Image (cartoon, rainbow, N blue to C red; front, side, top):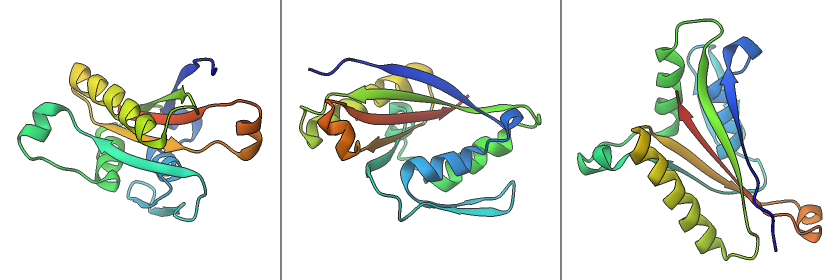
Length: 148
C-alpha cells in the first residue's frame, strides 16, 4: 500500500526559473518562451503518461480553450516584477495499484475541483515512475500547476 505524499512549490523568476520551461519539461512538449526568446524542447522526454489543460467549468461552458504555450506565456506576461512568482506547482503521488485510467480520472477530478474552487486553469501532467521506484513500492506522480 502506498503512502500519500503531497508537496507544493513556487515557480519564481527570483530563482531564475521560467514557467514556460518548467511546463515544457513536465508536459514533455516543445514550447516557445516568448519572454526570453527561447524554445524549450522536451518532446523526447520519457515517462510522461498524459498532460492535459484543465479549465474551470465556467470557461468550459463558454467553449473557451487555450493551449499550453499560450497559457504559460500569458502567465509570464501578466507578472512584471523580476522576482515574481509566476506559478505554483503541486506534486501529488498516486497509488501505483490503480489502473492508468483510474489514475487519470482521479488526477483530473482533483484538478477540476481546484480549478473550479479557485477559478484558475490547471496544467495536469502524470508521470510514470522509474522501474527502480516501482520495485521499491513507489507511486505515480502528478504535477498540477496554475498561474498565481
